[in-house]
Length: 141
Image (cartoon, rainbow, N blue to C red; front, side):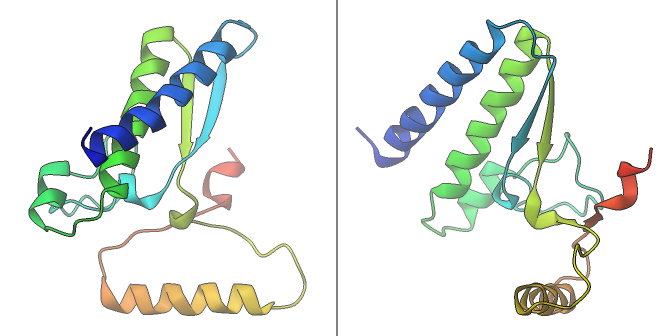
């Protein structure tokens, strides 16, 4: 079996089984799914805001010849989740934590937060087109 195909089959089968089990309960109307930036960040388009129509362009990613299969597998797993949600009529919300910033929950500036902010500043100077969502943006609505 090819490594990518094996990883994809291993990863999507449990996701489908868990989703099917959840859906049989019928009390579930909405599922919040934690994803990763690999599913949305590799494309050659300047899309601005990342939303449910934003996907890593797998052909573009493969053309980069990184040899890194996680991006392909993760993007395909997320597509399986979205297809399953549409097929079974429930609302799927995908949160991509690396792209969401929110208010600090403490009075001081902990080292871990300082490190994250430093990393974001480095990324921002590297790629001016990278857009982040602030956690309070939609929480008030």
